[in-house]
Length: 240
Image (tube, rainbow, N blue to C red; front, side):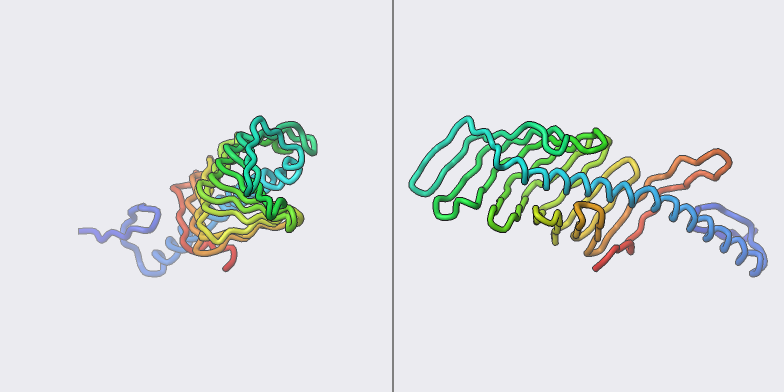
């Protein structure tokens, strides 16, 4: 019976002398490494763009708040409740339409606005759209901080979906942080992380807390081998 050696590409080759088998393994390892590098070069910039879209959508809220349209307003001794407030128009040449089920403003601290069931659609610079949803939000006009939590998601018109449990946004600096799990799904694959730190309005991104990537095959260019099966990594941390 002929001995069989199986490598990680599931290719079966006849047993060979140790030196020859070592060369075969080295070639396969180099090939796998090349595929991984090619996939990472494609997915990571796309992930960065997707997160940048989320930050841009959130930062855009800063210009929406002063021009809010309120079809229904309820007054009480504790504060002001706005029913189905809606914000729409253009900001920095971007169309937007943002609604909420309710917005509450306390008389004790009128600079703070609490939002419920946020639903927004915002145009991005490349003419794509980002749809943002969150169950709750809290805007502090004094500190220019915005917190979005529970059911936070951003879906882009070019096929990406970002989901998270919490986003802390500094509207002045454009920084967004989260110490809760975040996932990014799209045509190039999936990224899962325990948290994220986005600065420079999306131009600098740092994943934290056990990053995992599942990359989908890349269509081969003429004359190049196929990208091979998806590659999963449990050690692709961009930061801790």
